[in-house]
Length: 72
Image (cartoon, rainbow, N blue to C red; front, side):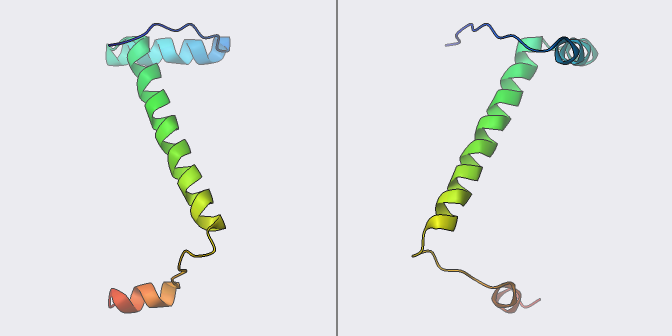
């Protein structure tokens, strides 16, 4: 199920979105949805990395150990 939302974006961004939609023959909503999905995935990855960075119990593996393990 989808839900309609309304957003305001700068004119330049709106023009770029329209151009991409026309070029790809996809609706603007398709591109906005894909961009939002990618952004949210990146944000979740960033939060995971930050959480691991602050987790003192998380083991740190050196690049040398990784190379040795992978026989590089």
